[in-house]
Image (cartoon, rainbow, N blue to C red; front, side):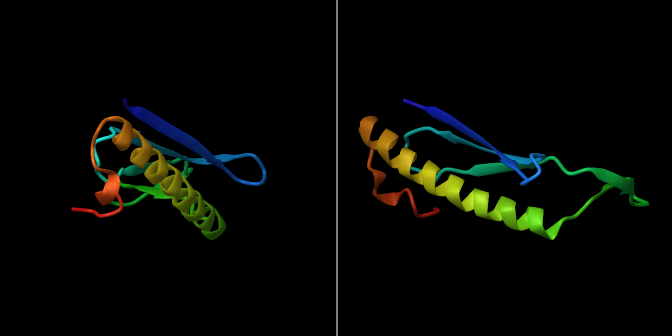
Length: 95
C-alpha cells in the first residue's frame, strides 16, 4: 500500500501560499515532506535569480502547517508500514 498526501496552506485572506506533499511508501522510512511556495516574484537579481516577496507571518504559518503535516505523515507511514509487513519502529529516525 502507498499513499500520496497533499495539503494547501492559505492565509486568513484565503490566498494560497504553499502546497505540502509527501509520498508514503510503507517501507519503514521517515517520510520526506516537500513544500512548494506560491510567492510572488517582485524582481530579479543581477545573476537572474528571482527576488520573492517575503512575509514573516506567511513563513510562520507555513512552518506551523509543515509541523502538523509531518505529524500526520509520520502517523500514516507507521500504519502503512505495519500493513505492508515492515517494522515501523525506525520511522522517526533519519538514517
